Length: 102
Image 1: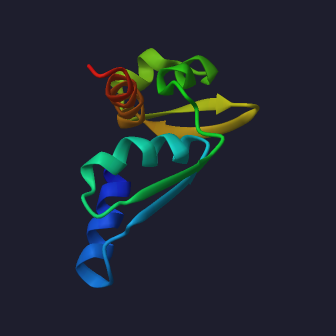
Image 2: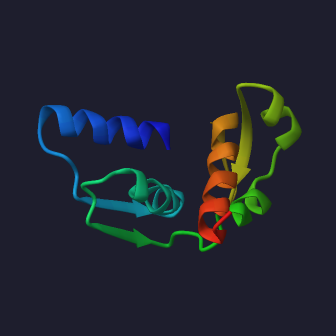
């Protein structure tokens, strides 16, 4: 989420503010969550974005407790291993709260 907002800020300052956000899968969840904080965004398009960001936690195979306490940790999603940061979990939980109106 922070990277997405930083990219939008950079575009706003150097070229033109983004008015459309497009994301696939987890990127779709990210653009849905980020759109309300980007005033020039007029549309969002997603392909295969999870309807419930917190559901993604169930898809992660790895030590999430370690990830919550360390800066990053490897996880496996659909047979592929990635290193993700603890802020990824925060973003998932924040996105879930936004969708549920918390």
